[in-house]
Image (cartoon, rainbow, N blue to C red):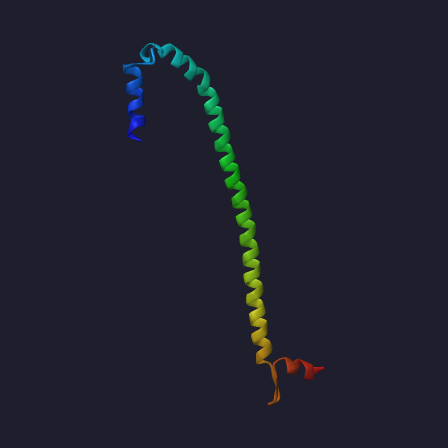
Length: 104
C-alpha cells in the first residue's frame, strides 16, 4: 500500500527503461482529458444502477412488510377466534366446539 504512494514520485523523478516520464506531461494530460469524460459517464451509470437496485429492493421490502402485517393480523384474529370458541359454554357440560354442535 505504501509503495503505491511513492509510484508517482518514482516515475516522475527517474528514467525507467530509457523513458523519462517527467517529460510526458502533455501526453498524460491528453490521455486524462480523453478518458476523463468516459470515466465520469461510467461512474454516473454505475451510480444510477446502484440507486435503481436499491429502489427495487425497497419496493420488495415494502411488499414483504405488507404481507407480514397481514399474516400477523390474520393469526392474531385466529387466536382471538380460538379463545372465543374455547370460552363458549352451554349449560354445565357443553363447552368449546361441542357447544356449536349442540346448537344445531
